[in-house]
View: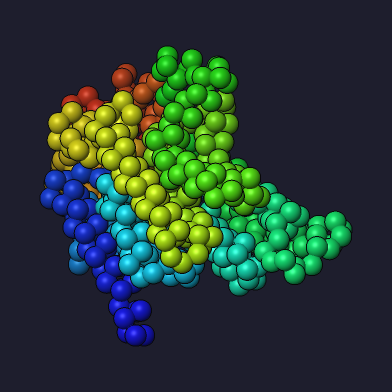
Amino acid sequence: MIRSKRALPLLLFVLIFGAEFALGYYITAIIGYMHSDAISRVANAFYVLYSRDPHLGAIGFVWNPLPSLLEVGMLTLYPLFPALATVGIAAVIQSSVFAGLTATLLYNAGRRFGLSALMSMMFALLYSLNPFIFLFGANGLSDAPYVYFLMMTVIQFSLWLKNRQTSALIVAGFALSLAFWTRYEAVPFGVSLALGVVIAVLWMRISAVEKRGTLKEKLYKVEATWILLLLPALFSGLLWIFFNYIIMGNPLYFLNSEYSNVAQSGALQNDAAFQEIFHSPLLALGFVLKKTLWFAIPLLSIMLLRLFSGRLFRWDMLILLLLFAAVPALQYLLLLRESSFGWFRYFMYVFPVTVAWIPYELQHFGKGARQRLAFTVLTAAMLGTAVLLSYAMTDPEIAPDENTFLHIKTGNEHYAAQTFERQIADYMDEHYPDATVLADSYSAYNIIVSSRYPRKYLITSDYLFKQAVKDPPGNDIDYILIPRPKENIPTSAVNAEFPTLYDGGIDWATLVHDFDGQWRLFKVKKWMGPDSAEEE
């Protein structure tokens, strides 16, 4: 019996991990495509070990560092298996592992809340094999680890709601902190949890004999619960700000630097549709609601079940709504601040939050026909969501990011760019294997990880980068590799420092190669004296 209990979750993990990795390997290693965000995180891990100045700070201070930090360990095998970096297999391994762990997490959650082994297995598979969710276990993005920590937080928090177990609260707190180290969406989710604690302590009773207590006593309980639940995440946030301050000189570097999401969203200044949304709170709200509704069938099903069972107007329903609304509320605020692209996947987190809540919901129906009926309704909701999201993936107007995986080689500008940048890396390796090449890794990451000689590039995380950008001839730079500038979008610190270099050149640099008008390579003339320059 004990072996059976352990074998089923292990079998589930192997099944999901194997299927996810097989798909991810086919997309990345066989077809040759990886989402730019995923390969960029691999690059951040790569710089820690294989840049000119290997150090942990090279992991970067814009994106949350945990996904790249986990990939650092895998990249120690890069000399034996270069594909871990060059095509991003390290990211595929990571997302596949967390997809498998999520399936096991859901199975165990079902068992802990009294579901049968069959129900728990079906529940885990219904979620994990949803085509939309399955894609994120294979594409190497940070969503798979984030969803795992997010679901763990919800499950442990709902266990605390059930029986007020302090241990569940502690685990939820650490899971929330790990979610923060993975994605910033954990911040509004933490706010929703804090409000959920207030509701649970002040108004919810888990048994008829539970002591009511005075308002003052309950407020003390709220305070104590917040400390257990939120302190790890709060400490993590302060630590991240501190790291940004002592290393980058700006405590909010991750938020407002030239490489931040705010800077990247400058591209939206040229998008008429987004400009209309940005300047209309009502249109922004409609945009958020439309995106969120694609993932809302399980929540609506829970509300329907509660309506018929007389539990719709219970306090824990309000807690679920708060958890559900956290990320859509964040996206709404970001749209009003003109700093969100509103990608379809940004709204997906409401789905795993609701799914993680389902075992808690089903326990209220007891064991028997009522629970089986409720499980059937929720199963239909999850199947309906799978059909709906599968359709969304086929429509580039709804889910453009996900749709690219269905048409990788036809009209996919990111696939074309990656293929082209690998060709640039091969060209640079063949003609300039020993040169010192100045390149901003913000835009050149795919070239750097594809190179057989990555240390020839002096990149953003290297100690001399800022100094070299200010004075390339005076810092022994042989060549400068820069991308074509784009309006309102950061492309390279070199472009920003010398805006005329790409098109008009400069007196101390000579164009030696143009890569189809997308990248240009300049040879740097070395200073021969304080008032003269001479080409080598």
